[in-house]
Image (cartoon, rainbow, N blue to C red; front, top):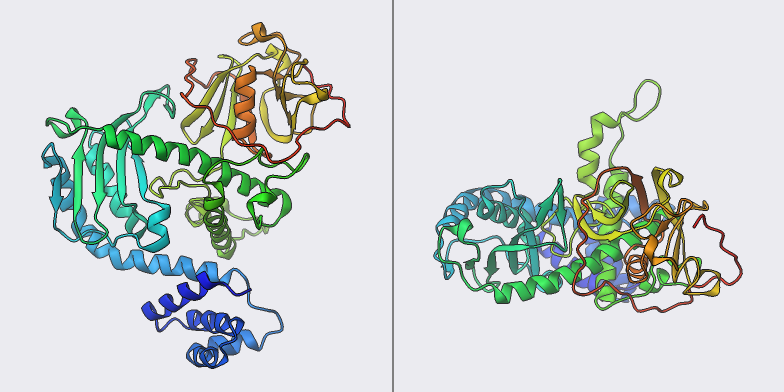
Length: 467
C-alpha cells in the first residue's frame, strides 16, 4: 500500500545516503505504487544488484526491510555523532556543575536536534538519577548525549523516592535540573532546581513541575499501551494493525478501553516493537554440540538487540525494556505494578495465607461484573491467573483487606481493582512472593483510567474462584 510518510522518508534517506542501494530500491517500489514509473525506473537503476536480487526471487519483498532500513539509518546518525559527543560530554559536564542559578546559555555545538514528527512526539524526556549517584548533573548530561538524535527538546533530571531497593513512581519526587535545547541553533539552557546538586541558589521549578506531571501521565499511557501491544503479539503471533485490535469485547479485551494520547502513540509503539523483534530475529544464535543455544555467549548482544522493548515516550531510559508486571507480596499484603525497579502502583490486598500459592502466573482472563454483579463476592472486576481458580478480584468484605481470610485469591478494594484492571493488559505476568515489597502504600492524586469501548462482561459463565 502506498504510504506518503514512507515515500517522504525514503526520499530524504537517499539524499543522505546515496550509496545505500536498499534505500533506492524501496523508494522505487513506493514510486511504482504512486504510478510514477519513470522515477521508479531511475531508482531501480541506482539500486543495481539489490533490485536484481529481489526481483529475481519468487517471494515478495519482506515487510521488515523498511523497518530495518530505518534502524540502520538511526545507527548511522549515532555513529556520526559519536566523536563529536565524546568531545562535548566533558565540556557539558563541567558547565552543568558550574552553571549559574538562573540557568545559562551555551553556544557550543550540541547534539543534532530532533526534527519533524519525532520532535513533536518526544518534546519532553526525563532522566531518573538514583540516590546513590553523587553526580546527578553529569548523569543527566551523559543521558542527553547518549540519546543523540532521539534527545527531546526538554530533558528533566529527577530523583524518585527510594525504599528497600525500589524506586517509587508515586512517592516524593525531587526535580534536580532541566536542560532546554533550542532546535533552531546549538544552544542549551540549563536550570538547576536543587541546592545540593548545584551548590547554588536554585531556580523556580514550577514550570518544570507542570511539564513533568504531564510527561508522567503520558508515560503511564505509554507503558500500558506498549505492554498491551507486546502481549497481543505473543498471543496472536502478529502485530495489531490498529488500536481497536486491542480494545475488543470479552474474551479478547487486551485493553479495557482507551485514553487520550493512545491513538497518537500507537503507530510509533508498534514500529519500535516490530523493529526490535526484527533485530532479535536477525541475530545468529550460537549452537552447542547438542544443538542447544548457548545463552551465556549471546546474552548481552541479544538483550541489546531487542532493547528498548517497551521503553519510554521520552527515549532516555533504556532500562525500561520489559512490559509492566504485577508482584504480590504475601508478607506485607501488598500488590504492586512494577516497571523494573520502579513501583508504578502499590495496593493493600487481602490474601489466603498458605492457601495463596507462590510462583509465576499470568492474567489469562479479564472480566467486568463477574457473575453479573458489581457488588457480589468478586466485586466489579476479576482477573483470572493462568486459567486456574485463583484470581485477582474485588470483594464484598472490605474489612478483609490486609488479612489472610480468602481461600487463596487476591482481594482488592473497589477503586484499586478497577484501576489495576485498566492499567495492566491481558497477558500481564503476576509473581506471587513472600517478602519483597515496601509496606507503605502511596496513591497518586489522579487514578489511571481508560474509557470503556467494549463489552467486557461474561454472562455465560458462573465464576467459582477461590474467594
